[in-house]
Length: 165
Image (cartoon, rainbow, N blue to C red; front, side, top):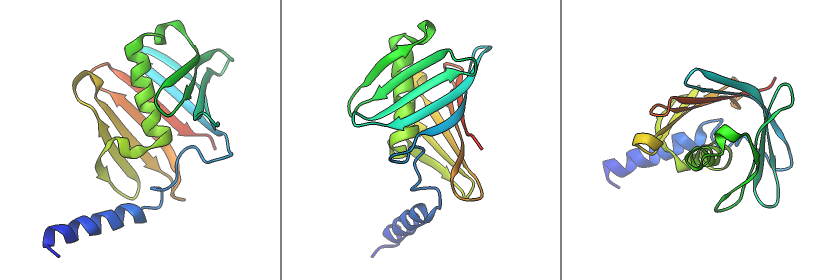
Protein backbone atom coordinates (compact mmCIF):
# COMPACT_ATOMS: atom_id res chain seq x y z
CA UNK A 1 0.00 0.00 0.00
CA UNK A 2 1.43 3.33 -1.03
CA UNK A 3 1.62 6.38 1.18
CA UNK A 4 -0.87 8.24 -1.03
CA UNK A 5 -3.50 5.48 -0.80
CA UNK A 6 -3.13 5.39 3.01
CA UNK A 7 -4.00 9.10 3.15
CA UNK A 8 -7.04 8.50 0.97
CA UNK A 9 -8.23 5.67 3.23
CA UNK A 10 -7.68 7.78 6.36
CA UNK A 11 -9.62 10.65 4.76
CA UNK A 12 -12.55 8.38 3.88
CA UNK A 13 -12.61 6.97 7.42
CA UNK A 14 -12.63 10.50 8.88
CA UNK A 15 -15.48 11.51 6.58
CA UNK A 16 -17.56 8.48 7.52
CA UNK A 17 -16.83 9.00 11.20
CA UNK A 18 -18.14 12.58 11.10
CA UNK A 19 -21.25 12.55 13.28
CA UNK A 20 -23.51 14.57 10.96
CA UNK A 21 -22.32 12.97 7.72
CA UNK A 22 -24.98 10.30 7.45
CA UNK A 23 -27.87 12.45 8.66
CA UNK A 24 -29.87 13.89 5.75
CA UNK A 25 -32.25 16.79 6.23
CA UNK A 26 -35.14 14.59 5.12
CA UNK A 27 -35.56 11.41 7.11
CA UNK A 28 -37.93 8.77 5.71
CA UNK A 29 -41.46 9.08 7.04
CA UNK A 30 -40.94 12.49 8.66
CA UNK A 31 -41.67 16.01 7.47
CA UNK A 32 -38.71 18.33 7.97
CA UNK A 33 -39.58 21.87 9.08
CA UNK A 34 -37.04 24.65 8.64
CA UNK A 35 -36.92 28.44 8.61
CA UNK A 36 -36.05 29.76 5.16
CA UNK A 37 -34.56 33.09 4.12
CA UNK A 38 -33.88 34.06 0.52
CA UNK A 39 -31.91 37.24 -0.15
CA UNK A 40 -31.14 38.60 -3.59
CA UNK A 41 -30.11 42.08 -4.67
CA UNK A 42 -31.74 43.87 -1.75
CA UNK A 43 -34.91 41.76 -1.79
CA UNK A 44 -35.68 39.53 1.18
CA UNK A 45 -38.13 36.63 1.49
CA UNK A 46 -38.52 34.75 4.74
CA UNK A 47 -40.78 31.96 5.76
CA UNK A 48 -40.87 28.26 6.43
CA UNK A 49 -39.75 25.35 4.28
CA UNK A 50 -41.37 21.93 4.60
CA UNK A 51 -39.73 18.91 3.00
CA UNK A 52 -41.60 15.61 2.94
CA UNK A 53 -40.57 12.33 1.30
CA UNK A 54 -43.09 10.97 -1.22
CA UNK A 55 -43.11 8.02 -3.61
CA UNK A 56 -42.06 10.30 -6.54
CA UNK A 57 -39.30 12.02 -4.56
CA UNK A 58 -39.07 14.76 -1.95
CA UNK A 59 -41.78 17.42 -2.05
CA UNK A 60 -40.55 20.83 -0.96
CA UNK A 61 -42.91 23.63 0.00
CA UNK A 62 -41.79 27.12 0.97
CA UNK A 63 -44.31 29.63 2.26
CA UNK A 64 -44.13 33.01 3.93
CA UNK A 65 -45.15 33.35 7.55
CA UNK A 66 -48.40 34.94 6.34
CA UNK A 67 -49.32 31.93 4.20
CA UNK A 68 -48.25 32.97 0.69
CA UNK A 69 -46.72 30.00 -1.14
CA UNK A 70 -43.29 30.94 -2.49
CA UNK A 71 -42.70 27.62 -4.25
CA UNK A 72 -43.96 24.04 -4.21
CA UNK A 73 -41.69 21.52 -5.98
CA UNK A 74 -41.47 17.77 -6.30
CA UNK A 75 -37.97 16.49 -7.05
CA UNK A 76 -38.31 13.34 -9.16
CA UNK A 77 -35.36 11.14 -10.05
CA UNK A 78 -34.46 13.12 -13.18
CA UNK A 79 -36.50 16.32 -13.18
CA UNK A 80 -38.23 19.04 -11.20
CA UNK A 81 -42.00 19.14 -11.11
CA UNK A 82 -43.27 22.66 -10.35
CA UNK A 83 -46.58 22.40 -8.48
CA UNK A 84 -46.68 26.17 -7.92
CA UNK A 85 -44.23 29.03 -7.83
CA UNK A 86 -44.38 32.82 -7.54
CA UNK A 87 -43.91 34.65 -10.83
CA UNK A 88 -40.40 36.14 -10.30
CA UNK A 89 -39.00 32.64 -9.66
CA UNK A 90 -40.58 30.99 -12.73
CA UNK A 91 -37.64 31.75 -15.00
CA UNK A 92 -35.96 28.60 -16.36
CA UNK A 93 -32.47 29.52 -15.09
CA UNK A 94 -33.77 30.28 -11.59
CA UNK A 95 -35.70 27.00 -11.50
CA UNK A 96 -32.60 25.15 -12.68
CA UNK A 97 -30.49 26.71 -9.89
CA UNK A 98 -33.12 25.90 -7.27
CA UNK A 99 -33.43 22.31 -8.49
CA UNK A 100 -29.67 21.79 -8.30
CA UNK A 101 -29.44 23.37 -4.86
CA UNK A 102 -32.33 21.37 -3.45
CA UNK A 103 -30.88 18.13 -4.82
CA UNK A 104 -27.61 18.79 -3.01
CA UNK A 105 -29.23 19.91 0.24
CA UNK A 106 -32.06 17.38 0.45
CA UNK A 107 -30.99 14.30 -1.49
CA UNK A 108 -27.25 13.86 -1.98
CA UNK A 109 -24.52 16.16 -0.67
CA UNK A 110 -21.95 14.21 -2.72
CA UNK A 111 -23.16 15.98 -5.88
CA UNK A 112 -21.12 18.96 -4.67
CA UNK A 113 -17.35 18.76 -4.21
CA UNK A 114 -16.15 18.79 -0.60
CA UNK A 115 -13.84 21.75 0.09
CA UNK A 116 -13.51 21.83 3.89
CA UNK A 117 -14.71 19.60 6.71
CA UNK A 118 -14.47 20.24 10.45
CA UNK A 119 -16.48 18.98 13.40
CA UNK A 120 -18.77 22.04 13.22
CA UNK A 121 -18.81 22.95 9.52
CA UNK A 122 -18.82 21.35 6.10
CA UNK A 123 -18.15 23.46 3.00
CA UNK A 124 -18.98 22.24 -0.52
CA UNK A 125 -18.83 23.77 -4.01
CA UNK A 126 -20.75 22.96 -7.16
CA UNK A 127 -20.30 24.38 -10.64
CA UNK A 128 -18.35 27.40 -11.82
CA UNK A 129 -19.00 30.85 -13.24
CA UNK A 130 -22.64 31.92 -13.37
CA UNK A 131 -23.88 28.59 -11.97
CA UNK A 132 -21.41 28.41 -9.07
CA UNK A 133 -22.97 27.35 -5.76
CA UNK A 134 -21.27 27.30 -2.36
CA UNK A 135 -22.86 25.21 0.41
CA UNK A 136 -21.93 25.77 4.06
CA UNK A 137 -23.47 23.20 6.41
CA UNK A 138 -23.25 23.91 10.14
CA UNK A 139 -23.73 21.18 12.73
CA UNK A 140 -25.07 21.50 16.27
CA UNK A 141 -23.57 19.82 19.36
CA UNK A 142 -25.66 16.66 18.79
CA UNK A 143 -24.20 16.19 15.31
CA UNK A 144 -27.43 17.17 13.53
CA UNK A 145 -27.65 19.87 10.90
CA UNK A 146 -28.49 23.26 12.42
CA UNK A 147 -28.08 25.54 9.38
CA UNK A 148 -27.45 25.26 5.64
CA UNK A 149 -26.26 28.35 3.77
CA UNK A 150 -26.37 28.28 -0.04
CA UNK A 151 -24.60 31.15 -1.84
CA UNK A 152 -24.51 32.06 -5.52
CA UNK A 153 -21.82 34.75 -5.72
CA UNK A 154 -22.36 35.76 -9.37
CA UNK A 155 -26.13 36.02 -9.07
CA UNK A 156 -25.96 37.60 -5.60
CA UNK A 157 -28.45 35.07 -4.28
CA UNK A 158 -28.23 33.61 -0.79
CA UNK A 159 -30.54 31.03 0.76
CA UNK A 160 -30.41 30.18 4.46
CA UNK A 161 -32.16 27.11 5.85
CA UNK A 162 -32.19 26.86 9.65
CA UNK A 163 -33.48 24.17 11.94
CA UNK A 164 -36.66 25.05 13.85
CA UNK A 165 -36.10 24.37 17.51
